[in-house]
Image 1: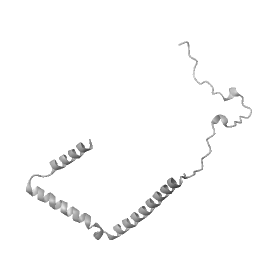
Image 2: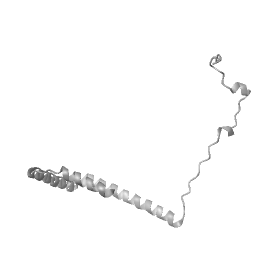
Image 3: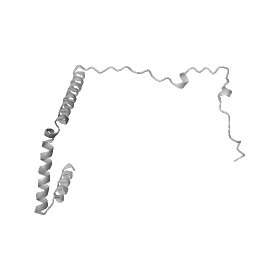
Length: 118
């Protein structure tokens, strides 16, 4: 199935290419200009590339630390121990102090009319 997808994408790509020599030359020139623009980005934007390089180094350092931590945990057979939160208390287990109220007082009053023999 993957081979069919690749063939379809290549076929669509080839079908979209221009057939006239002038348009082909124009497309070739645009592709060359775009490649030059991408390759020379850091020459035009030195500060941005410098910041990007610093961020990339930080990312690499964090990734190495995470991989080393995971490797050490697997190698040593240790698992990180997280404190388990207390289990929630079910409402029935809560002590309710209702004062002088009786169970009948706690039941909601009927608010509708009585039905007449449906």
